[in-house]
Image (cartoon, rainbow, N blue to C red):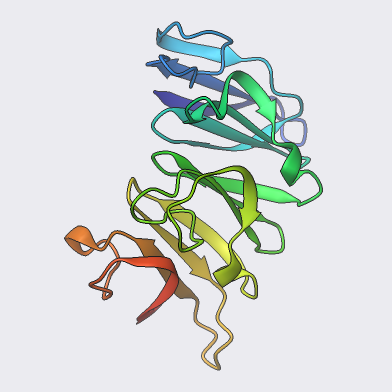
Length: 202
């Protein structure tokens, strides 16, 4: 499926909307049912002005300008799913600015650079907690608790995070975790299950 953020209106008075289309067997289009669509359809059940979106295999996420996080689709079968956008209550007051979605896990980043994860850990411990456990509610990643994270990108079996450096050169660091197959973790050649810095600087 595909998720698009569409903006309209005059500068300073822009309004944004989320549109989805494609496969909807798990409710990932957020339209209240499981009917698939070949053309974009507006998702109406989001309160506020969406400013960021992300999508996994069977789920979608939107963040509004007032830092509300909405989730829909299926993240964990029979435990974390919704056919229409629902507010992620556990992230209220966290000032979330954007999210990153993997196959079946989500990371949310706050204005202050804190990271919260939920979904499937799976074999490669993709939530960053070091275990394969699932989590139906967002939890802060312990290994990044004392770091300022600027961006996260997720694949199906690995994650990368751009982190502010505390070193004298002030160059950002790249932390990675998950599967090392096909050189996905850069110069780290073994699977790692918590965020770990690679040697290269950026």
